[in-house]
Amino acid sequence: MFEPSESAGELVLNIVESGHMLVPQGHDLLDGFSLLDAPSFLKVQQKSDTLLFRLTVKGESRLIRMQFSGSRTEALEECGSAVLRLKEYLPATTTTQLPPNTQSAPYQDHCTGSTGGCWGGYGY
Image 1 (spheres, rainbow, N blue to C red):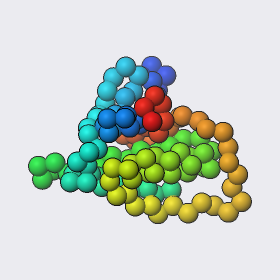
Image 2 (tube, helix red, strand yellow; image 1 turned 180 degrees about the vertical axis):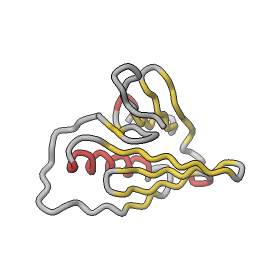
Image 3 (cartoon, rainbow, N blue to C red; image 1 turned 120 degrees about the vertical axis):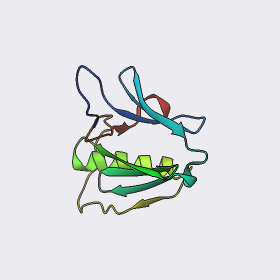
Protein backbone atom coordinates (compact mmCIF):
# COMPACT_ATOMS: atom_id res chain seq x y z
CA MET A 1 0.00 0.00 0.00
CA PHE A 2 1.28 3.43 -0.93
CA GLU A 3 0.07 6.52 0.87
CA PRO A 4 1.02 10.16 0.32
CA SER A 5 3.26 11.58 3.02
CA GLU A 6 5.34 14.68 3.63
CA SER A 7 8.59 12.71 3.53
CA ALA A 8 7.80 10.54 0.48
CA GLY A 9 5.71 13.08 -1.39
CA GLU A 10 2.36 13.11 -3.13
CA LEU A 11 1.17 10.27 -5.32
CA VAL A 12 0.36 11.47 -8.82
CA LEU A 13 -1.20 9.72 -11.81
CA ASN A 14 0.19 10.96 -15.12
CA ILE A 15 -0.63 10.04 -18.69
CA VAL A 16 2.08 11.37 -20.95
CA GLU A 17 1.91 12.22 -24.67
CA SER A 18 3.51 8.88 -25.61
CA GLY A 19 0.52 7.04 -24.10
CA HIS A 20 2.28 5.83 -20.98
CA MET A 21 0.68 5.88 -17.54
CA LEU A 22 3.11 6.74 -14.74
CA VAL A 23 2.55 6.77 -10.98
CA PRO A 24 5.40 8.63 -9.27
CA GLN A 25 5.75 9.52 -5.61
CA GLY A 26 8.30 12.23 -5.11
CA HIS A 27 11.36 11.20 -7.15
CA ASP A 28 10.42 7.47 -7.22
CA LEU A 29 8.44 5.81 -10.00
CA LEU A 30 6.05 3.35 -8.31
CA ASP A 31 4.44 2.00 -11.47
CA GLY A 32 4.26 2.69 -15.16
CA PHE A 33 3.19 1.03 -18.39
CA SER A 34 2.03 1.73 -21.92
CA LEU A 35 -1.68 2.31 -22.45
CA LEU A 36 -1.39 1.62 -26.19
CA ASP A 37 -2.21 -2.08 -25.75
CA ALA A 38 -3.95 -1.64 -22.39
CA PRO A 39 -7.33 -3.11 -23.42
CA SER A 40 -5.62 -6.51 -23.52
CA PHE A 41 -4.56 -6.42 -19.85
CA LEU A 42 -6.26 -3.51 -18.04
CA LYS A 43 -9.84 -2.81 -16.94
CA VAL A 44 -10.80 0.52 -15.35
CA GLN A 45 -13.90 1.35 -13.34
CA GLN A 46 -14.86 4.60 -11.63
CA LYS A 47 -16.84 4.34 -8.41
CA SER A 48 -17.58 7.76 -7.00
CA ASP A 49 -14.22 9.48 -6.34
CA THR A 50 -12.23 6.27 -6.77
CA LEU A 51 -10.65 4.54 -9.76
CA LEU A 52 -10.24 0.77 -9.72
CA PHE A 53 -7.61 -0.69 -12.04
CA ARG A 54 -7.55 -4.45 -12.65
CA LEU A 55 -4.34 -5.54 -14.37
CA THR A 56 -4.01 -9.11 -15.64
CA VAL A 57 -0.60 -10.26 -16.87
CA LYS A 58 0.38 -13.89 -17.49
CA GLY A 59 -2.72 -15.12 -15.68
CA GLU A 60 -2.03 -13.10 -12.53
CA SER A 61 -4.29 -10.21 -11.53
CA ARG A 62 -3.59 -7.14 -9.46
CA LEU A 63 -6.13 -4.59 -8.25
CA ILE A 64 -5.11 -0.98 -7.73
CA ARG A 65 -7.42 1.50 -6.00
CA MET A 66 -6.86 5.24 -6.38
CA GLN A 67 -8.96 7.65 -4.37
CA PHE A 68 -8.96 11.36 -5.19
CA SER A 69 -8.82 13.94 -2.40
CA GLY A 70 -10.30 17.38 -1.92
CA SER A 71 -13.94 18.18 -1.35
CA ARG A 72 -16.42 15.60 -2.62
CA THR A 73 -17.15 17.76 -5.67
CA GLU A 74 -13.45 18.31 -6.42
CA ALA A 75 -12.64 14.62 -6.05
CA LEU A 76 -15.51 13.61 -8.35
CA GLU A 77 -14.46 16.15 -10.98
CA GLU A 78 -10.81 15.05 -10.91
CA CYS A 79 -11.76 11.38 -11.05
CA GLY A 80 -14.11 12.06 -13.97
CA SER A 81 -11.35 13.94 -15.77
CA ALA A 82 -9.03 10.97 -15.31
CA VAL A 83 -11.66 8.62 -16.75
CA LEU A 84 -12.09 10.81 -19.83
CA ARG A 85 -8.34 10.77 -20.44
CA LEU A 86 -8.11 7.00 -19.91
CA LYS A 87 -11.00 6.43 -22.35
CA GLU A 88 -8.71 7.72 -25.09
CA TYR A 89 -6.84 4.40 -24.70
CA LEU A 90 -9.29 1.84 -23.31
CA PRO A 91 -12.89 1.36 -22.21
CA ALA A 92 -13.65 2.57 -18.69
CA THR A 93 -16.93 2.15 -16.85
CA THR A 94 -18.45 4.74 -14.55
CA THR A 95 -20.86 4.19 -11.68
CA THR A 96 -20.74 7.75 -10.37
CA GLN A 97 -23.71 10.01 -9.94
CA LEU A 98 -23.01 13.58 -8.95
CA PRO A 99 -24.88 14.65 -5.84
CA PRO A 100 -27.57 17.28 -6.42
CA ASN A 101 -26.72 20.97 -5.91
CA THR A 102 -22.96 20.58 -6.22
CA GLN A 103 -20.92 23.55 -7.31
CA SER A 104 -17.60 23.57 -9.09
CA ALA A 105 -14.55 24.25 -6.97
CA PRO A 106 -11.00 25.21 -7.93
CA TYR A 107 -8.69 22.45 -9.17
CA GLN A 108 -6.53 20.72 -6.56
CA ASP A 109 -3.91 18.13 -7.32
CA HIS A 110 -4.00 16.15 -4.05
CA CYS A 111 -4.96 12.53 -3.46
CA THR A 112 -5.30 10.04 -0.66
CA GLY A 113 -6.10 6.38 -0.40
CA SER A 114 -4.41 3.06 -0.79
CA THR A 115 -2.09 2.22 -3.65
CA GLY A 116 -3.02 5.31 -5.42
CA GLY A 117 -2.60 8.85 -6.18
CA CYS A 118 -4.23 11.57 -8.05
CA TRP A 119 -4.80 12.80 -11.50
CA GLY A 120 -2.87 15.73 -12.75
CA GLY A 121 0.65 16.85 -12.40
CA TYR A 122 3.12 17.30 -15.18
CA GLY A 123 1.91 14.80 -17.75
CA TYR A 124 -1.65 15.34 -18.69
